[in-house]
Length: 337
Image (cartoon, rainbow, N blue to C red):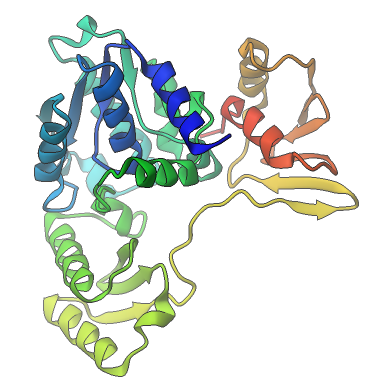
């Protein structure tokens, strides 16, 4: 499908859908917000200020909403007053989204809108993101998934439409090693380090991972910064800020991509999480776009010629359209928490 056709498909899906969109001004939500501004301008954007985002996050969302001429509200929720979030446990992202989306639903005008949207795309379903599960809890709609739009599609559509978006929309708590307590001091340190790096490294993805005051720098192309003077300046600056050690991850920033493996003429892809087979089976039955019969077993689901295993492995006989068939079934997959 050509890029223009995918844009038109998204426009048709969102047309006249008076919606509330959870808005971060990142690539996904910016694309959805732009389309809403074209086909459903009575929609509203809502951003949560949870005190765990980069310094310029809120101001950028306000500027982008104004540019799109859409109503925009900001809800303040200080997560750093919550002991559960300070502990930074494995369920942090799941619980965070639950609280944020609940706050949006408590808005006095919430019931005046027909749809509650969020920006998960098809590629996000390949990643270990338990927070995605919250979508169904709050009856949210994911237009990018409904329209079969991948992360690469999003970038291509944004480029085609000449849109700008924030590259700095991920929660700073995700930079801190799981189960290490988070604090405003650590967030400030991470944000200052990333802001400094962006002055000298012109790459899209720049992250400073925090582990007991050791900084691990993760960027798209690490070999491009292997200049002696630059490395020395980065080391000195980050140590001056408060880091004890400064490391560079030479594997590069890992971007998720659907690539299959082949074993004895069987194509397969292993998801990074276990699958709830019962709920997945129910989703397949309910999905009117999936016309083939399916069968639920103790460890697998068989749908058409696709086998879905509870350990996350999805396989099918050798085929030229593996990715298309995989993407067709992917939205029905339910992970276990």
